Amino acid sequence: MHSWKQAVARAFDGAEGYDGAAAIQAEVAQRLAQRIGAEPLAPAPRILEIGCGTGLLTAELRRRLPDGRLVASDIAPAMVRRCRARFARAPDLAVVVMDAERPALTPGFDLIASSLAAQWFEDLPGTLARLAALLAPSGLLAVATLGAGTFAEWRAAHAALGLEAATPLYPTRHALAALPFPGCTLAVSVDPLVEAHADGRAFLGALRRIGAGTPGQSGTLSPGAMRRVLRGFEETGARVTYEVVTLFIRRDRQG
Image (cartoon, rainbow, N blue to C red; front, top):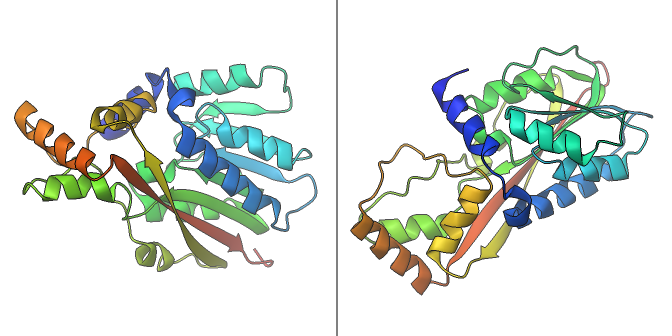
């Protein structure tokens, strides 16, 4: 596993307070499952979940698709253990450790779903193409990820001081809509969600508790610079936007 992925896996392994801080993640999972439930799927669909975490989307999929045969996966072993514990009385559910960017699975899934995990992929276009190749004819790959407008307020607080935020650079909606998926149709939608925090340190603490503290490409700020950024962020309300971009990739009937 590459060093970046090791860092991501360790961050999520250490996210003991994930569920308590994952309000946005829970809402995105619920919305994604609701949209999936309105889509035509095969009877008793074969389902693969990518980045299951503690099981937020897993629970929604089981509730809405009770006849589905579900395999839930995550790159972080501790998250897999938590998800298994959450569904200990569900013998029909398999929860496995897997790197979604190198899925060693047999094609034929009627649904592949992922909620707020794809933003951690090193190769987003290639990984989505590989996952789409695992779909059965008419199968659906439903992915909710983060777009370029995410954390705009936090980045603006840095930019006002001539600094750059150490947050990942997420793709634009247009870049995602332009991705090629031969033999498939692609629909893209954007749903911005805003989360309010008591102050800047509460925002950073929430990120750490959900395992999202892995830094981007920028260096670490000095304590004085960070205090100035926090002050500017709080002056604008200590609110952050999550630009949730949802991709529905449907394989053609011919496969």
